[in-house]
Image (cartoon, rainbow, N blue to C red; front, top):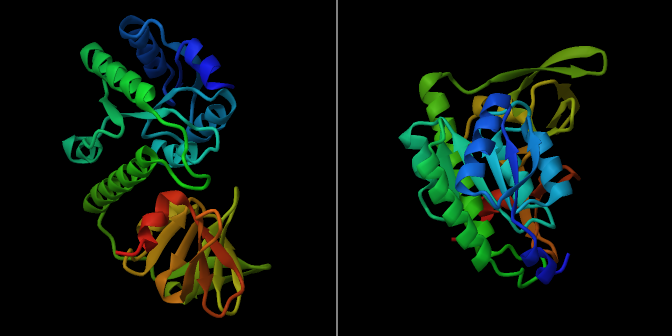
Length: 279
């Protein structure tokens, strides 16, 4: 779609929340405070939000933070890396002020449940102003400044969310993992794991000597690991810092993690690129 065509059509929104009544409430209040906005789609979970954002290319996505499957945070990370993405993300959250403070940087917005019409009207004005001021990508493979700011804010909220979780449910880091190797169940010492890598059904546990499988997804595994030893570098990958031989950058600017004594190379998603950024 050309810029002229895009500017001639009404702005379009995707509403993502696993609660139907909350979606209906938000749509009703949007119709009141932003009547020209077209609701082009709805999603009931994070993965559906990503899929519909790619298919429908909305100008703004309203994302509930707590959703089944991918959370709103995880979905946002996927959405902002879509090649066609030029829109804005607004989070809808029931978090307290400590978590919400992570958003107060101006690059994106948040709404507290229950969504108040006055606050929603303010959000509409902010989103319209940011969309109007948006510039096209300058260099292929280079993230625009507003998307980089979004990555930083997502990182802050993830950290806040994990801190709240650890404070509510303190427990020592995981020491042993019960894995399946062929038809055998084995205990693997966590310190021997080079990296964890997930697909749709399983998480691969890779040591120097063997590859094993567990059913625990990355998002559940990460809070149980020692954060000083293991870093998430992609939605589907966690790496042992002691196993990293080098981090390189390809011609598109993407970072790659090379594992000491192992041939596999792990991609670092743009949302986690700051972890290896030179100071």
